[in-house]
Image 1 (cartoon, helix red, strand yellow):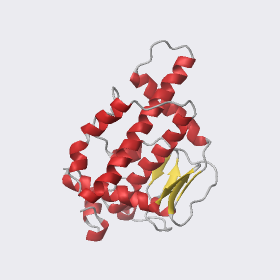
Image 2: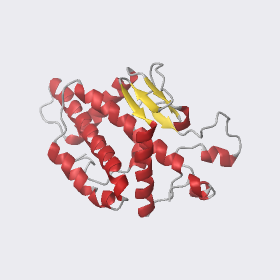
Image 3: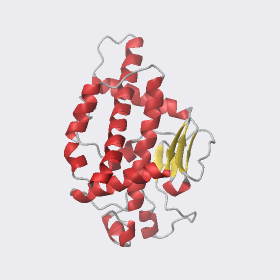
Image 4: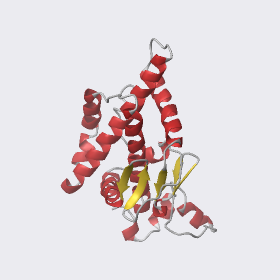
Length: 227
């Protein structure tokens, strides 16, 4: 968010907590769908591809180890945010600046290159789509402010205005999510354990949070952790 954050390394795990989304309507996802966002469908296979790359990126860095569930939820949150941003940007027909998209991709080139070759396309595609979406949100905000008489609009102000537009737009969109990935509550993707039971112990509550503790993740079986 060149000028406001797009040039730094994009963290999909962090983006999952920042996505400004609100659940609206009553559309429903079919068995092969992770989510349906208005006219757009996000297949489980796409979420898994991005989550696998996210796991690899996390493992190659110094970040806290992720549970595979966290990676999948983070991936889905980014993909939903991207879909909404694209839909919002299409209304005023705003475009993402290609030079700024390229700069963001260049900034993340080392991260992409560190991934196994077969995981790079999904990660890079998701990253590019996410950056383009955020740039379109910013330009939609800029256009709205200019339409209201603002002569000079900084990137930071445009991004804030765009985020407000995105939140309002999301209220009008039918969004449904496979319960395995969680639920939308108060504009955020909340963690889901894949179980319909209500957590009662402290450890169960920790595991049901969006960012469980390192001790909880370390106690998971190997096949449930990013490696």
